[in-house]
Every structure is written in structure tokens, then in C-alpha cells.
Length: 585
Ligand SMILES: Nc1ncnc2c1ncn2[C@@H]1O[C@H](COP(=O)(O)OP(=O)(O)OP(=O)(O)O)[C@@H](O)[C@H]1O
Image (cartoon, rainbow, N blue to C red; front, side, top):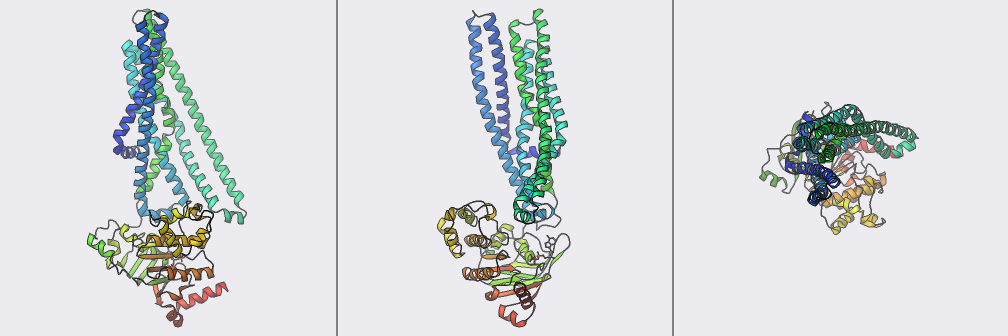
């Protein structure tokens, strides 16, 4: 139930619009009741009193009015209700993003990313049914029952009571049964759809490996079996929907017969005019329009509420690792100082461990000064990526100090810290859009000239020009139409456009061959000559001209200096280089 109230809470800002949608929904059904009622009266009057023009003329006007207004009300009701529902969804997405963003890394560790993406996207979509089918229709149905009762009771109270009772029975009983029978199936359907999404995305992303290993057939069979399960569940759901539709129709006809059986003796006793009979029947049938859609809505209620429950559970999951909390210690003056050159980063005796207790950094100390190019190198697992995560405030450090322009990192707001860095990482995020649009992610609103200038600096301009539509070429999902090196260069051009004070490279050459790697690092040195660069890698090619190299081992600095000095010392750096050289000979 708390899920229900929490979802209602999201509607609060749009309550006026939603009330208007409910009112318009009621007016639509009301217009239909009016249309049927006056039509019934018109038929009877035309048959029994064709000579009385006034008796016929008035209902004709009524029929026209209700017929036209019904369409207008329906249109406005759809407009208001869908607009409000989509605004509520937008609000939920924004709220959810705000809740998930600080725990992004941790959530990805605990959940399969396909699972998470699939369920979050489809669960949020599912919530639109909440207002459109679960909140508004029952209220409209209640109002309509009241309307039908008033109209029929005006003829005779027993008719009013009878029809109201039948409408309540049909409007509550059949949706309840549909909900009972559809709940488990609906939940299984949601799970199966999430599974299908995950299997399909695994198949697409892992296709080259699966084909190479000759296992794509197995994956396709899994996909087919999930699809069959979904088809089976869908058939079950459709069966329930058809049965409840038939039950609703039967209830409407039963109500009609009961009205006839009650009204005819009343006419015989002179308590009711014969002229009223068609009106009574048609109003009864029109009243059922308001409850017709309820069974299908409640059949899906299980799915909708389960979707809300999953989303709230994801958003409420406590962080096992304490977050930074509110960065309260930074004044406006502090933020100004943060952006004042010369910029300096200082790690002092930093210790960091992951939630499972794995110690990643131990007493780590180093410095990065304005315009310096510093490389942090080390074997796999040495702690290099953990340094990057600390700098971007993706993880907290436990002891020691990280100073950005003499200000403690944990006291600074995330946005201010992240705006200092342009990141070129191992996994370049490219989108299925044009090259230009991908570049503009670095600086929204950048002119085509600015983008080209950045592309020239990143030495990718010529390759882009050679594409079929140049900068307007669509580069495919994840930049699939580009080579690994081209992707890295597009990412670099993006980082250059961003023009952040510090450029962070995280294993940027991992998808390149040794020779291209060497050339890439050297060209980056030239392009980024007057910028501050932190280069994190376990590949040592091309680092000869770095200003400073820091070798990290088991979370702390084991050696540092310039390339010639480290080579001469024949220590850890020299050994790493030798080991890598032997590997590619
Ligand atoms: N999410 C995590 N949870 C627990 N331990 C982790 C996590 N990520 C990294 N570690 C551990 O922290 C240590 C440092 O890892 P880190 O990823 O920083 O190394 P790295 O030098 O970047 O390695 P690589 O070059 O392979 O990327 C390793 O022992 C690793 O197993």
C-alpha cells in the first residue's frame, strides 16, 4: 500500500490538471449517458406521439448536443490526462536519476547492468498506467454510478438502487477477480520481459565472441524459450481479459433485463410512464461504459504496483559505503579559489578501501602541478583506477587528504570538482548519432567550427572528412563504425572541446596496437602541450616525454621521476617496461 501512496505523492504537483482530466472523463461518460437517455426518449416520443413536434424537437437538440460534446470532452480528457501522466513520469525519472547517481558504481557492482537498465526503463514506462488506468477510471466510475442512480431514481427509487447495485457489483467484483487471476501472471510477465531484454542485449554486444566460439545458437535458443514463455503468459493474460470483458457484457445485459422486469410492472401499476422505458434501458447500458475498462486496468495493477515497488527498492537501497554526504564545508569564496590558476592536486597519505574491505590505496602521496603531464603507471590491480574514482568523487577515501588548490576534496561539491576534469577513458561513451552531435556532448551548443578545430587538434579531422557524410555521418551504437583508435580520438576531441583545466586519461590506449599506441601518446603530448594532464595506464609505450612518472604498486607509490631517471635507476619502472617489451617481441 505504501507503494500506492508514494506513487500518488508524485502526482501532487499536477493535481489540478489531474482533477480536470477526471472531471472531463466524467463529462465524457455523462455525455454518453445523456445521449443514450435522450435518444431513448426520442425513439419513444417519435413512435407514440409523432404529432407533437415539441416533444420530438427538444430531444433532437439534446441528442446533437450530447453527441458533439462527448467527442470534445473525450479529446480534452485524453489531452489532459496523458499530458499530466507524462509529466509525472518525467518527474519520477528525474527523481530516480538523482537517487541512483550517487550510488551508480555500487549499484552496477550488485546488479547486471542490462538487468538494471531494462527494468528501470520498462518499470518507469509501466507507471503511466497508474494514473491513466488505476486512479482516474475508478473515480470516474464512482461519479457515473452516482449520476445513473440520480437519473433512474428520479423515475423510481427501486430502479436507481438496482442499477447502482449492478454497477458496483460489476465495477468492483469483475476487476477484483481479474486482479486476482492476473497478478502472478503479470509479475512473471514483467520478469520474463526483463530477462528477454538482458538476453537480447547480451547477444548483440557479445555477438563476435559468441560467433567465434560457435555458441550463438545456444544463446538464440535461450532467447526463443524466453519469448515462448512470454507468449504463453500473454495468452493467459488475454484469456483473462476476454473472460472479464464477456462477464462485464453479461452483467450489462443482466442489468438491462432486471430493469425491464422491474419497470414493466411499475408501468402496469401506473407508477411509471411507458415513454420512459427506452430511456431507462439505454441509460443503464451507457452507465456500464464507465466500468468496462476497470477489469483490464486491475488485471495490470499487479504489474504496475510491482514496477513501482522495484523502483522504490532500487532508489531506497542503503549505501553500504558511506557517501561523502552534503559538501557543506565550501564557501562561494572557496569555489572561486578552486578555479583560480595555477591549479594543483595533492594526494597526502591517502587510504581507500572498497565496501567489501579490499584495500586499494595505502598511504598514497603525489602531486600534480599546473601544465604538468604526469603518468601514473603500475600493474593490473595496483590501484590506478581507484585514484581516478577518488578524483571524480565517485568513491570516498577513508583517511589522508586530497587537496585541490589547497581545499579538501571531500568538502567540495561534486559538480564543482567534476567540472575541473575532461575525461578520456578506456570505455568511450559514443552514441548512435552524428559525429558532430557526439562531439557536442563535450560542449553543448559548440559551433561546427569549434568542433572541427577540436577534431583537428585530436588528429581525427581527416578521418571524419573521409566518412560518407563527413561530420554528419551517423557512427552507430557505441561508435560501432569507428576503429578503436578513432573512438579514442573522438573522445579526446570531446575532452578538448570541454576545455576543462585538467584532462584525465584512463587507459586510453588499451584498444590500440603497440605502434599506434606510441604515436597516440606522442601526438597527445603535442596537442595538450599547455594543459594539465594526468595519464593513468599500465601500458608504458610513449611515456618517454612525460614530465613525471609515478609507479604505483599495491596502492602506494613505489617509485617516481622522469623517464630517463627511472630507466637509469633500473627499478620497478624499468622492470615493467622490460616485461612488456618481452611480451610483444
Ligand atoms: N569495486 C571493487 N570492489 C572491491 N575491490 C575492488 C573494486 N575495484 C577494484 N578493487 C580492488 O582494488 C584494487 C585496486 O584496483 P584498481 O581497479 O584501482 O587497479 P588498477 O591498477 O586500475 O587495475 P587495472 O589496470 O587492471 O584496471 C585491486 O585489488 C582490485 O581487486
